Length: 384
Image (cartoon, rainbow, N blue to C red; front, side, top):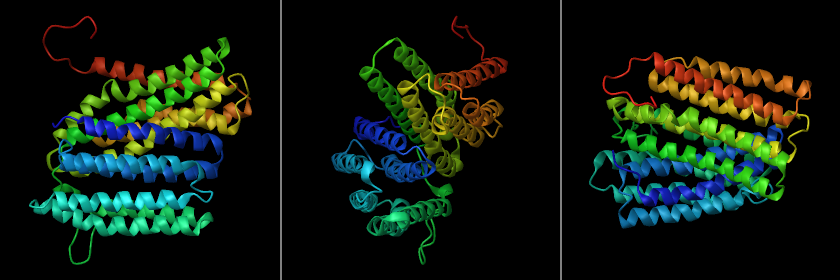
């Protein structure tokens, strides 16, 4: 497996700011429309990141031209993130133009860079018309504004997903099925793990900055609770699944492309969304830990971990073809507790504590399942 380069990690740093902007947008718009808009923005930002990650899977990030591309995309990603607060209030055109330039420009660069490799040229030739079309929809939505902006951006996202699912068919050229993609699965898995770390790190930054503004005993307790929640989500993802997932993807053979498309393009943004929603819940927790949970606070505090666990359940089911019952049960329980927390006027801190306990129960179930699995022979560590 090719190791992740410093240029790729440098590119990733921008997305700490991006995730922060998305979390703050959701916090500032704690209603269903705000959540839908945040989801649209996350999807578009994810397209920028994940297609760049696929590109560096085939290109050489340690070469000067590719590094220059990553730096240019890094600048564009900063502009995207900076535009997020006003993107639906008259500032969407900057976001849309930068998005279009990045999606189309990266593909044109890749077409130039992969000359001499027919199967890669063929693949990028087929993706280019789709990226041009969806980018035009994003720009048109920003120009029109209002509800049409949301509808056109949602249409662009749906078309993008359809294109990827069908191999980006183009009349006269055919399609590029994922089963034919020559993919370094371990590299993709490592890159997506890095993004999960970025999202979790951002949630800690949000809570830490809030604590610094109101440092007292109550706030310190709320911060410890929020921090423990972030650690629990990290543990669920990284303790056992992450290393094993990289191995499964690497050994998938002809299935690597299709498996990577589903696991990384489709399921990882669900987990990232769960972390963003949880981060918004942590901000509510630190703001008023003893206040009764409002519908928004309950949805953030309980729904965020539920969304993360649901995404991770689907991720495990896809890779290992098993039914991750502990994650499914935990997600359903968190969803069921949400209206109950509002009806009973449960304090936000209590709701956050319940979310933490349920997530820890998933970790305990994982460890119990791990002990039941046959162990390899050899000396046993005291920590095993």
